[in-house]
Length: 280
Image 1 (cartoon, rainbow, N blue to C red):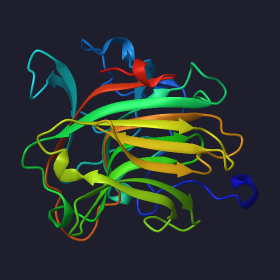
Image 2 (cartoon, rainbow, N blue to C red; image 1 turned 135 degrees about the vertical axis):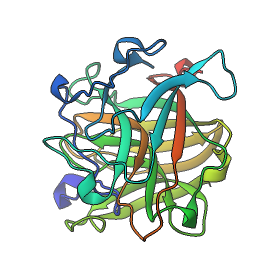
Image 3 (tube, rainbow, N blue to C red; image 1 turned 90 degrees about the vertical axis):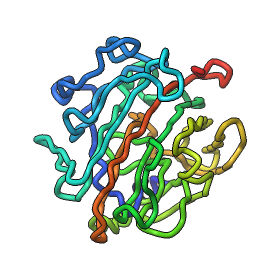
């Protein structure tokens, strides 16, 4: 069991993840969503807040690039973008983000039901650069965290700065070292290519059984096709205060290549006890 060896789920080389102050409103930036259809920070059966260190003006609600009658969320990152608050400084780690995090009110104290389905759809602009044409570092398009642990339990990411275009789902453990070497991989699986997201909507669905023991479970589906199955711990005892973040987060950028602008669009972000009730 995880609590016996006291490792912390984290994504090595992305460390500067930040731990949100749940559910304090003092960390909500003036960019809080209040535009239709994302009213009152509530959508997809969740209550959402702007994550610490999110960069002002890097978020908007815009027409869907493919269906202009539908509004979607747009997140942007450019070279030099980074943010900080009184409690967290992304600039220290050459990181940048605009993310939302989930206010975990419905299922206390766990923050999630024992078993839960999750969904989001993501699209990148045509011409988005990837691999060696971006700095070395993870481009994170969704993550699950457990307060007060800084590092994620599970992430969906592209590791840029190299030759491959892989999109991976990763579970990691803390090493106790400084970023970007603070985490090691527990389980990882290539589930697709970042090229699939460029100019196209890709639908991510996850089924997760939250447990600190061997009965933990994760299934990953892309566009309805099963891409990953994992059995083992998915959180740390006592498995409380689990929440999700989504948006655009490029962590620990390094290697000398400047960041080329990234625009990520999201829709149908949701969670449900039953897969058929996820937003579509």
